[in-house]
Amino acid sequence: MKRVVLSTSLLALLFATSCKSTKEEKEEETGKYIATSPVKMDTSFTKDYVSQIRSVRNIEIRAQEKGFLQNIYVDEGQFVKAGQLLFKIMPKIYEAELLKAEAEAKAAEIELQNTSALAEKNVVSKNEQAIAQAKVDQAKAEMALAKLHLSFTDIRAPFDGTIDRIPKKLGSLIDEGELLTSLSDNSEMFVYFNVSEPEYLEYKANGKGTGNKVNLLLANGQKLKYSGVVETIESEFDNETGNIAFRAKFPNPDRLLKHGETGKVLMTVPVHQALIIPQKATYEIQDKKYVFVIDKNNVVKSRNITITGELADLYVVASGLAEDDKILLEGVQKVKDDDKIAFEFEKPEEVIHHLRLKAE
Image 1: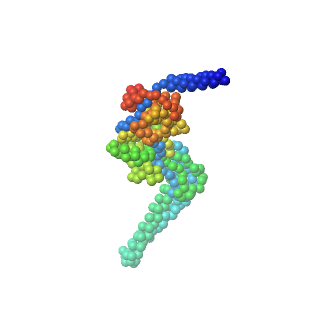
Image 2: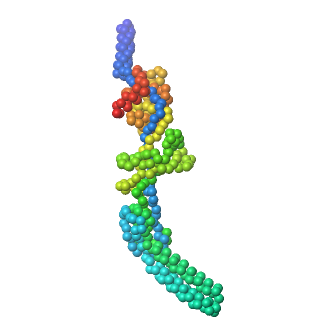
Image 3: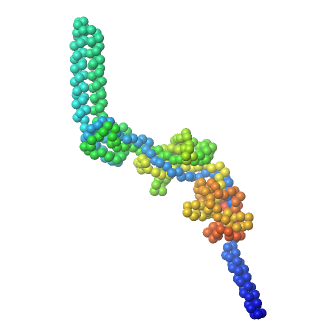
């Protein structure tokens, strides 16, 4: 019986010693971590805004007369000059109408001459002469209208630009108002992007308005080599999104940008008393950013945060943290929720100073 009690006591002692050893090994393995806090400061960061790229002029070229498409003088994607002939609608019927109007005008003029001669001899009244003159004026108006209809059979470019798709082929019957193609002036481009209300207020509070320079990030991740300028800010916010639209103009001498293209506007956004943390204090799960916050008992808890901007090695935090929170700076990948840790605290100003020195 004594042997059993002794064996049990020995096992308990060994178990306690083993647990203590495991705990000590874990603490030894864990060691001390580095922690810091967010810091508030006035700063600015470059933010990207999804944008839509539009030509400074983009119009639809439509037929103004009905008829068969007799000639196409251009091709899709071709650059054309202002006044260049693009299409011809078969003009025969409009030529005939013009000849008829010219003949009627000539007949009216002969009738006016005869009436005027009779009026001078008092054979007919002055009123009859005035009626004859009105007939001449009417015939000339009809002739001018016929010339105008005939001119509409020649469709010309109203400005320099690039031809878009041509849906109709030679011989197609064209109705009045039917789309023949589109024409884009891509010498300069308008880029539209939406800015949130808080960012807009910060933007205006810092004295910024039109004339502010911005850059454009293309769909392939490369930056356009030409800078643009913010030209206009719309007068109203969108009630559904809470955003307001900005418009920037970019030069496009290489014709790289096309109407309907997409990209991202890169704009420097000033922020007053922004909450800043080092990027290395964060980790990501399913496109969400997290940090480990250390409580008063030195236990780490993961917390989801929202990032509103990005600087070199730093994040601007929109929500999820307070200025007096302690966050784990180093060892983020080594701990898990509810771990109790030992740490050394580094002032956030010193942490940021070292990060900036490293960046330089």
